[in-house]
Length: 344
Image (tube, rainbow, N blue to C red; front, top):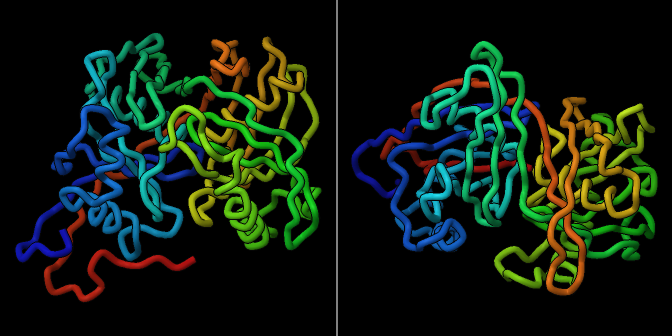
């Protein structure tokens, strides 16, 4: 788009899920080669049809910001799904996004793309780069009650990885839930998940991610396209309720982006760890809070064992998403800033 001589417009529908933005591009998306969403993600990374330029335009300032998030609607892998999506952020295209899946479920039923039960649960099936997921959207008298993101099979990768950091030597757990996450307790870093520590949390989150990104534990055994540490989850233990554990986290993903929500796929990664060590029982619910104190609740059911014998769980993460606006963006051919910039 940056090189076009004539002015064109890109229209989006914006939602937020528990405070985290999700910008939906549902028309005029460049056609990408590939028969699956995973293959189309690779084409997008290579900027096929100028789609990476379009991502930058919508994500960068002055139209977005360093923590912007969104997705391009693309064809599903087959007729078993209602739609496909390529998730994007300031650094490129991600493999999974729970808060985006929740927003897409609400958007699809808000707009009639998927016919909605006004007094019940409507399942919206979505193909994403890491597999097939679902958003189960509940309404009462047409009004939104909540939406549950049902993720791909998730599992523990490693526990207690000893890592020297600028703050101390810490032990890191790693798990997969559509993407690979590193988890570390905030107190082990001399921090708490509080806005006053925001800058320090970003810095150490980035440090841990890049220290482990190329490690053997970060290499996905089944699909190399899912390799690498997507985010660092820094968490506080807030005790328990009658329903189960309560934790607060900040997820620092990509290269220093901060999820304002409790992070949908990151919550799934925490569920895999908590189910494995017995902290979250099969009939319990995790109350997962974000740095802005928005809330997801999460539970799990058993999944099939992996070929290497590793057990898996299927996490379900429930939250809400709300429309924030309809946008029309353009790039003036004379604009010397082009697709924009980010400041972090």
